Length: 180
Image (cartoon, rainbow, N blue to C red):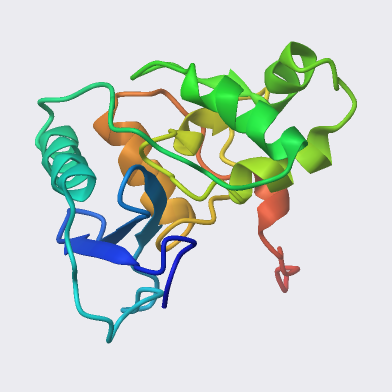
């Protein structure tokens, strides 16, 4: 696999939420992927580090150890202008704080774009570094999470940051009738 520079820089680390894979173009972090069902996007590709990846690894380890509350490693998430506007709002959410999808919509002058905002949050290519786990419904419910093993991963991250949440929104589950 290659980037526009022709080289994919890649590191992997173990974490409390599973293995994490970080890629770089040599200047910035371009993706962070959390293990899902035991696999990562570039399993089988040899690691090749660069100083920005070494710094990202250091900062992520400090985060999981409870020693870091913000990241300052350079990131270059690729996406549409809309996605980048959403990600900029998410990046401004500090450790232990949350925003709702509606608050993000108002901040980018798209108050009725809830579904599109949710899709942009889910498409964040650098989760953890841009803390999309800090976005909840207006009622404080978890409405989903595309990283790692989904909602359990998000619950772990929220609990790690001592962020109050109300668990998964009931509409996420296919409720079956109970026989009387």
